[in-house]
Length: 328
Ligand SMILES: Nc1nc2c(c(=O)[nH]1)N[C@H]1C(S)=C(S)[C@@H](COP(=O)(O)O)O[C@H]1N2
Ligand SMILES: [Mo]
Image 1 (cartoon, rainbow, N blue to C red):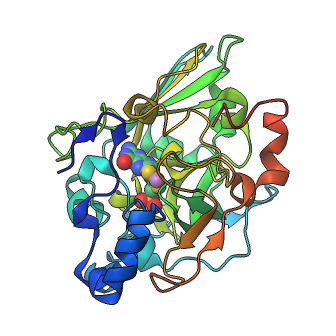
Image 2 (cartoon, rainbow, N blue to C red):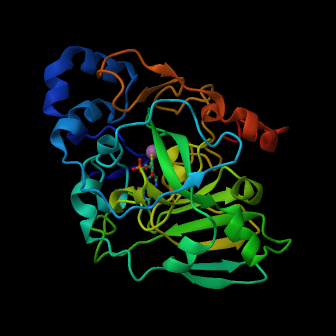
Protein backbone atom coordinates (compact mmCIF):
# COMPACT_ATOMS: atom_id res chain seq x y z
CA UNK A 1 0.00 0.00 0.00
CA UNK A 2 1.16 3.51 -0.70
CA UNK A 3 1.18 6.44 1.66
CA UNK A 4 0.04 9.90 0.82
CA UNK A 5 3.06 12.17 0.58
CA UNK A 6 2.93 15.82 1.62
CA UNK A 7 2.82 16.90 -2.01
CA UNK A 8 0.00 14.54 -2.76
CA UNK A 9 -0.28 10.95 -3.75
CA UNK A 10 2.89 9.49 -5.23
CA UNK A 11 2.05 7.58 -8.39
CA UNK A 12 5.52 6.11 -8.86
CA UNK A 13 5.04 3.03 -6.76
CA UNK A 14 7.45 0.12 -7.12
CA UNK A 15 4.67 -2.43 -7.58
CA UNK A 16 3.87 -0.84 -10.93
CA UNK A 17 7.15 -1.99 -12.42
CA UNK A 18 6.33 -5.42 -13.74
CA UNK A 19 9.00 -8.05 -14.20
CA UNK A 20 8.32 -7.99 -17.92
CA UNK A 21 8.81 -4.25 -18.15
CA UNK A 22 12.04 -4.52 -16.25
CA UNK A 23 13.15 -7.37 -18.47
CA UNK A 24 12.31 -5.54 -21.67
CA UNK A 25 14.07 -2.33 -20.96
CA UNK A 26 15.43 -1.87 -17.49
CA UNK A 27 18.10 0.58 -18.52
CA UNK A 28 15.87 2.86 -20.59
CA UNK A 29 13.10 2.57 -18.02
CA UNK A 30 15.41 3.76 -15.28
CA UNK A 31 16.77 6.53 -17.48
CA UNK A 32 13.29 7.76 -18.31
CA UNK A 33 12.22 7.47 -14.72
CA UNK A 34 15.24 9.51 -13.66
CA UNK A 35 14.45 12.07 -16.35
CA UNK A 36 10.91 12.31 -15.04
CA UNK A 37 9.51 11.29 -18.42
CA UNK A 38 7.40 8.54 -16.94
CA UNK A 39 6.88 9.38 -13.31
CA UNK A 40 3.88 7.09 -13.15
CA UNK A 41 3.03 3.47 -13.52
CA UNK A 42 3.14 3.61 -17.29
CA UNK A 43 5.45 0.74 -17.92
CA UNK A 44 3.03 -1.77 -16.60
CA UNK A 45 0.28 -1.95 -19.18
CA UNK A 46 2.02 -3.92 -21.87
CA UNK A 47 2.58 -6.76 -19.49
CA UNK A 48 -0.94 -6.64 -18.15
CA UNK A 49 -2.57 -8.11 -21.20
CA UNK A 50 -0.67 -11.29 -20.63
CA UNK A 51 -0.95 -11.19 -16.84
CA UNK A 52 -4.56 -10.28 -16.30
CA UNK A 53 -7.53 -12.41 -17.20
CA UNK A 54 -10.11 -10.41 -19.12
CA UNK A 55 -13.48 -10.65 -17.37
CA UNK A 56 -16.25 -12.79 -18.78
CA UNK A 57 -18.81 -11.02 -20.95
CA UNK A 58 -21.44 -9.14 -18.96
CA UNK A 59 -25.15 -8.79 -19.68
CA UNK A 60 -25.78 -7.04 -23.01
CA UNK A 61 -26.46 -3.29 -22.92
CA UNK A 62 -26.69 -1.98 -26.45
CA UNK A 63 -26.81 1.70 -27.33
CA UNK A 64 -28.17 3.50 -30.38
CA UNK A 65 -26.20 5.85 -32.60
CA UNK A 66 -25.53 9.23 -30.99
CA UNK A 67 -26.32 12.52 -32.67
CA UNK A 68 -24.17 14.51 -30.21
CA UNK A 69 -21.43 16.37 -32.14
CA UNK A 70 -18.01 14.84 -31.45
CA UNK A 71 -19.50 11.75 -29.81
CA UNK A 72 -17.56 9.28 -31.94
CA UNK A 73 -13.82 9.59 -32.46
CA UNK A 74 -12.22 7.74 -35.37
CA UNK A 75 -9.29 6.34 -33.32
CA UNK A 76 -9.00 2.57 -33.04
CA UNK A 77 -10.95 1.23 -30.06
CA UNK A 78 -8.82 -0.11 -27.20
CA UNK A 79 -9.11 -3.89 -26.79
CA UNK A 80 -11.77 -4.74 -24.19
CA UNK A 81 -9.34 -7.00 -22.36
CA UNK A 82 -7.08 -4.02 -21.63
CA UNK A 83 -9.77 -1.47 -20.74
CA UNK A 84 -11.24 -3.92 -18.23
CA UNK A 85 -8.00 -5.07 -16.58
CA UNK A 86 -5.83 -1.92 -16.50
CA UNK A 87 -7.83 0.34 -14.19
CA UNK A 88 -7.74 3.15 -11.70
CA UNK A 89 -10.28 2.54 -8.93
CA UNK A 90 -8.39 3.23 -5.73
CA UNK A 91 -11.19 1.94 -3.51
CA UNK A 92 -10.01 -1.49 -4.69
CA UNK A 93 -6.24 -0.86 -4.62
CA UNK A 94 -3.65 1.34 -6.29
CA UNK A 95 -2.14 -1.24 -8.63
CA UNK A 96 -3.64 -1.18 -12.13
CA UNK A 97 -4.54 -4.87 -11.83
CA UNK A 98 -6.20 -4.52 -8.39
CA UNK A 99 -9.70 -3.38 -9.50
CA UNK A 100 -10.18 -6.35 -11.87
CA UNK A 101 -8.90 -8.63 -9.13
CA UNK A 102 -10.85 -7.16 -6.19
CA UNK A 103 -14.01 -5.43 -7.44
CA UNK A 104 -16.10 -8.63 -7.54
CA UNK A 105 -17.11 -7.76 -3.94
CA UNK A 106 -18.95 -4.61 -5.09
CA UNK A 107 -22.74 -5.09 -4.85
CA UNK A 108 -24.49 -3.15 -7.61
CA UNK A 109 -28.07 -4.09 -6.59
CA UNK A 110 -29.95 -2.60 -4.86
CA UNK A 111 -28.42 0.76 -5.78
CA UNK A 112 -29.80 4.24 -5.38
CA UNK A 113 -28.56 7.66 -6.46
CA UNK A 114 -29.62 10.61 -4.31
CA UNK A 115 -29.98 13.85 -6.25
CA UNK A 116 -30.14 16.84 -3.90
CA UNK A 117 -29.09 20.39 -3.09
CA UNK A 118 -30.03 23.41 -5.17
CA UNK A 119 -32.81 21.77 -7.20
CA UNK A 120 -36.60 22.17 -7.25
CA UNK A 121 -37.20 18.44 -7.51
CA UNK A 122 -34.74 16.49 -5.34
CA UNK A 123 -35.17 12.77 -5.78
CA UNK A 124 -33.76 9.37 -4.94
CA UNK A 125 -33.47 7.29 -8.08
CA UNK A 126 -33.28 3.51 -8.13
CA UNK A 127 -30.71 2.24 -10.63
CA UNK A 128 -33.41 0.63 -12.77
CA UNK A 129 -35.24 3.97 -13.09
CA UNK A 130 -32.00 5.62 -14.16
CA UNK A 131 -31.42 2.95 -16.81
CA UNK A 132 -34.76 4.00 -18.35
CA UNK A 133 -34.43 7.76 -17.88
CA UNK A 134 -33.17 8.41 -21.41
CA UNK A 135 -32.35 6.40 -24.54
CA UNK A 136 -29.05 4.51 -24.32
CA UNK A 137 -26.44 5.69 -26.80
CA UNK A 138 -23.06 4.24 -27.68
CA UNK A 139 -20.29 6.83 -27.92
CA UNK A 140 -16.64 6.22 -28.70
CA UNK A 141 -14.69 8.56 -26.42
CA UNK A 142 -11.04 9.06 -25.67
CA UNK A 143 -10.07 8.88 -22.01
CA UNK A 144 -6.75 10.51 -21.06
CA UNK A 145 -5.41 9.70 -17.62
CA UNK A 146 -3.38 12.38 -15.84
CA UNK A 147 -0.67 9.71 -15.50
CA UNK A 148 0.06 9.84 -19.23
CA UNK A 149 -1.79 6.90 -20.78
CA UNK A 150 -4.98 6.99 -22.79
CA UNK A 151 -7.59 4.66 -24.22
CA UNK A 152 -10.57 4.73 -26.57
CA UNK A 153 -13.75 3.14 -25.27
CA UNK A 154 -17.27 2.60 -26.63
CA UNK A 155 -19.31 3.74 -23.62
CA UNK A 156 -23.06 3.15 -23.31
CA UNK A 157 -25.24 5.71 -21.57
CA UNK A 158 -26.87 9.08 -22.08
CA UNK A 159 -26.14 12.79 -21.66
CA UNK A 160 -26.17 13.77 -17.99
CA UNK A 161 -28.18 16.85 -19.00
CA UNK A 162 -31.28 14.61 -19.28
CA UNK A 163 -31.15 13.91 -15.54
CA UNK A 164 -30.23 17.49 -14.61
CA UNK A 165 -33.24 18.86 -16.50
CA UNK A 166 -35.54 16.47 -14.63
CA UNK A 167 -34.53 17.74 -11.16
CA UNK A 168 -34.71 21.45 -12.18
CA UNK A 169 -31.62 23.17 -10.76
CA UNK A 170 -32.28 26.53 -9.08
CA UNK A 171 -30.33 29.73 -9.77
CA UNK A 172 -27.99 28.80 -6.92
CA UNK A 173 -26.79 25.64 -8.66
CA UNK A 174 -23.36 26.73 -9.91
CA UNK A 175 -21.51 23.42 -9.45
CA UNK A 176 -22.42 19.73 -9.36
CA UNK A 177 -20.74 17.27 -7.00
CA UNK A 178 -20.51 13.54 -7.70
CA UNK A 179 -20.04 11.40 -4.61
CA UNK A 180 -19.04 7.80 -5.16
CA UNK A 181 -19.54 4.79 -2.93
CA UNK A 182 -17.20 4.42 0.07
CA UNK A 183 -18.13 1.10 1.65
CA UNK A 184 -15.35 -0.38 3.79
CA UNK A 185 -17.13 -3.73 3.81
CA UNK A 186 -16.88 -4.24 0.05
CA UNK A 187 -14.04 -1.86 -0.87
CA UNK A 188 -10.79 -2.98 0.76
CA UNK A 189 -8.84 0.30 0.27
CA UNK A 190 -11.47 2.67 1.66
CA UNK A 191 -9.69 2.20 4.99
CA UNK A 192 -6.41 3.49 3.53
CA UNK A 193 -5.12 7.05 3.58
CA UNK A 194 -4.53 7.25 -0.16
CA UNK A 195 -7.48 9.64 -0.57
CA UNK A 196 -9.99 11.36 1.69
CA UNK A 197 -12.99 9.09 1.06
CA UNK A 198 -15.56 9.20 -0.37
CA UNK A 199 -14.11 10.02 -3.77
CA UNK A 200 -15.82 13.28 -4.65
CA UNK A 201 -15.46 14.97 -8.01
CA UNK A 202 -17.30 17.99 -9.38
CA UNK A 203 -18.04 20.00 -12.50
CA UNK A 204 -19.25 23.49 -13.18
CA UNK A 205 -22.97 23.41 -14.04
CA UNK A 206 -22.36 24.31 -17.70
CA UNK A 207 -19.79 21.51 -17.97
CA UNK A 208 -22.25 19.08 -16.41
CA UNK A 209 -24.94 20.20 -18.88
CA UNK A 210 -22.65 19.83 -21.91
CA UNK A 211 -24.07 17.11 -24.22
CA UNK A 212 -20.73 15.25 -24.24
CA UNK A 213 -20.85 14.79 -20.45
CA UNK A 214 -22.14 11.27 -20.20
CA UNK A 215 -23.74 9.13 -17.52
CA UNK A 216 -22.33 5.70 -18.32
CA UNK A 217 -23.91 2.31 -17.57
CA UNK A 218 -22.06 0.10 -20.02
CA UNK A 219 -19.08 -0.37 -22.30
CA UNK A 220 -18.40 -2.58 -25.33
CA UNK A 221 -22.15 -3.24 -25.58
CA UNK A 222 -22.32 -4.76 -22.09
CA UNK A 223 -23.24 -3.65 -18.59
CA UNK A 224 -20.20 -1.98 -16.95
CA UNK A 225 -17.84 -4.41 -15.25
CA UNK A 226 -17.43 -3.54 -11.56
CA UNK A 227 -13.82 -2.42 -12.05
CA UNK A 228 -14.93 0.20 -14.58
CA UNK A 229 -17.40 1.81 -12.17
CA UNK A 230 -20.61 -0.23 -12.10
CA UNK A 231 -23.46 0.38 -11.94
CA UNK A 232 -22.95 3.95 -13.14
CA UNK A 233 -20.08 6.35 -13.67
CA UNK A 234 -19.34 9.58 -15.47
CA UNK A 235 -17.41 10.11 -18.72
CA UNK A 236 -16.17 13.67 -19.29
CA UNK A 237 -13.96 13.15 -22.32
CA UNK A 238 -12.14 16.51 -22.46
CA UNK A 239 -10.95 16.26 -18.85
CA UNK A 240 -8.37 13.99 -17.24
CA UNK A 241 -9.84 10.63 -16.31
CA UNK A 242 -10.00 11.29 -12.57
CA UNK A 243 -12.87 13.77 -13.11
CA UNK A 244 -15.02 10.80 -14.17
CA UNK A 245 -16.11 9.30 -10.85
CA UNK A 246 -17.05 5.63 -10.66
CA UNK A 247 -19.92 3.96 -8.79
CA UNK A 248 -21.80 7.21 -8.10
CA UNK A 249 -24.30 7.29 -5.21
CA UNK A 250 -25.00 11.01 -4.76
CA UNK A 251 -25.27 14.04 -7.01
CA UNK A 252 -25.42 17.37 -5.22
CA UNK A 253 -26.00 20.83 -6.70
CA UNK A 254 -24.12 23.57 -4.84
CA UNK A 255 -23.28 27.26 -5.08
CA UNK A 256 -19.56 27.22 -4.13
CA UNK A 257 -16.78 25.46 -6.01
CA UNK A 258 -16.42 22.15 -4.13
CA UNK A 259 -13.26 20.76 -2.57
CA UNK A 260 -12.78 17.57 -4.56
CA UNK A 261 -10.87 14.50 -3.36
CA UNK A 262 -7.95 15.05 -5.75
CA UNK A 263 -7.68 18.77 -5.03
CA UNK A 264 -7.54 17.89 -1.32
CA UNK A 265 -4.88 15.25 -2.01
CA UNK A 266 -2.62 17.62 -3.97
CA UNK A 267 -3.85 21.10 -4.97
CA UNK A 268 -0.59 21.85 -6.84
CA UNK A 269 -0.95 18.70 -8.91
CA UNK A 270 -4.65 18.18 -9.54
CA UNK A 271 -6.63 21.33 -10.29
CA UNK A 272 -10.38 21.69 -10.16
CA UNK A 273 -10.73 22.08 -13.93
CA UNK A 274 -8.32 19.36 -15.04
CA UNK A 275 -9.00 19.98 -18.69
CA UNK A 276 -6.63 17.90 -20.79
CA UNK A 277 -3.97 20.45 -21.75
CA UNK A 278 -0.62 19.50 -23.32
CA UNK A 279 0.72 22.97 -22.45
CA UNK A 280 0.18 22.68 -18.71
CA UNK A 281 2.57 20.14 -17.22
CA UNK A 282 1.86 18.18 -14.12
CA UNK A 283 4.50 19.40 -11.59
CA UNK A 284 6.26 16.02 -11.76
CA UNK A 285 5.91 15.16 -15.46
CA UNK A 286 5.02 16.56 -18.87
CA UNK A 287 1.49 16.29 -20.25
CA UNK A 288 2.59 16.94 -23.85
CA UNK A 289 2.35 13.33 -24.97
CA UNK A 290 0.49 10.18 -24.09
CA UNK A 291 0.74 6.44 -24.58
CA UNK A 292 -2.33 4.73 -26.00
CA UNK A 293 -3.05 1.50 -24.16
CA UNK A 294 -2.32 -1.56 -26.24
CA UNK A 295 -1.07 0.37 -29.21
CA UNK A 296 2.70 0.36 -28.92
CA UNK A 297 5.51 -1.37 -27.20
CA UNK A 298 6.52 0.13 -23.89
CA UNK A 299 9.29 2.27 -25.31
CA UNK A 300 7.75 3.08 -28.68
CA UNK A 301 7.05 6.68 -29.57
CA UNK A 302 4.20 8.37 -27.74
CA UNK A 303 1.53 10.40 -29.48
CA UNK A 304 1.01 14.12 -28.87
CA UNK A 305 -1.76 14.96 -26.45
CA UNK A 306 -4.44 17.15 -27.98
CA UNK A 307 -5.87 20.30 -26.40
CA UNK A 308 -9.08 19.35 -24.54
CA UNK A 309 -8.24 15.76 -25.51
CA UNK A 310 -9.32 16.54 -29.08
CA UNK A 311 -12.73 17.94 -28.09
CA UNK A 312 -11.67 21.58 -28.51
CA UNK A 313 -14.31 22.40 -31.14
CA UNK A 314 -17.06 21.23 -28.82
CA UNK A 315 -15.91 22.61 -25.45
CA UNK A 316 -13.39 25.46 -25.84
CA UNK A 317 -16.09 28.17 -25.78
CA UNK A 318 -16.94 27.27 -22.17
CA UNK A 319 -13.50 28.50 -21.13
CA UNK A 320 -13.27 31.71 -23.16
CA UNK A 321 -11.59 34.35 -21.01
CA UNK A 322 -10.44 31.84 -18.38
CA UNK A 323 -6.68 31.62 -17.75
CA UNK A 324 -6.11 27.90 -18.32
CA UNK A 325 -2.65 27.99 -16.72
CA UNK A 326 -4.03 29.36 -13.45
CA UNK A 327 -7.22 27.33 -13.73
CA UNK A 328 -5.57 24.00 -14.56
N1 LIG B 1 -14.55 6.18 -7.46
C1 LIG B 1 -13.46 6.31 -8.24
N2 LIG B 1 -13.61 6.81 -9.48
C2 LIG B 1 -12.53 6.94 -10.29
C3 LIG B 1 -11.23 6.62 -9.84
C4 LIG B 1 -11.11 6.10 -8.51
O1 LIG B 1 -10.01 5.79 -8.03
N3 LIG B 1 -12.25 5.95 -7.74
N4 LIG B 1 -10.15 6.79 -10.67
C5 LIG B 1 -10.28 7.78 -11.76
C6 LIG B 1 -9.17 7.76 -12.71
S1 LIG B 1 -7.71 8.41 -12.16
C7 LIG B 1 -9.33 7.34 -14.00
S2 LIG B 1 -8.07 7.54 -15.14
C8 LIG B 1 -10.57 6.68 -14.45
C9 LIG B 1 -10.20 5.31 -14.99
O2 LIG B 1 -11.31 4.65 -15.54
P1 LIG B 1 -11.13 3.16 -16.10
O3 LIG B 1 -10.50 2.32 -15.04
O4 LIG B 1 -12.47 2.70 -16.51
O5 LIG B 1 -10.20 3.28 -17.25
O6 LIG B 1 -11.51 6.53 -13.40
C10 LIG B 1 -11.61 7.62 -12.50
N5 LIG B 1 -12.71 7.41 -11.56
MO1 LIG C 1 -6.45 8.88 -14.09
